[in-house]
Amino acid sequence: MITTADRPPLPPAPDLTVRQKCRNAQPGSYGHECGRPAHFAITYWTDAWCSYPARWYTGFYCVACYQNGYEAQRARELGVRTVALTPAMDGVR
Ligand SMILES: [Zn+2]
Image (cartoon, rainbow, N blue to C red):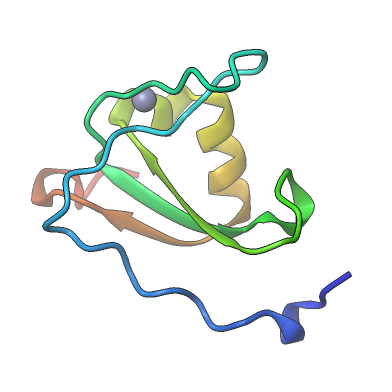
């Protein structure tokens, strides 16, 4: 178990010039990601969830999934950095 103090530094913030697609997947739909244009990037440590070895992961989510998506909700719980990818989303939380 890697303690919080042992974690490597946060990865760089997402490149806002790259258009990302939503990575949210609902339970039982692994491999079938949403795919709509992403408006939020959430960086979280995967230790408490699903990736081994644990690592920093940045998930990208559209507005609908950010607000209601299963995976996005977990990302929001664990997230240590949330970035609005478009100026229109700056005030949305
Ligand atoms: Zn989505």
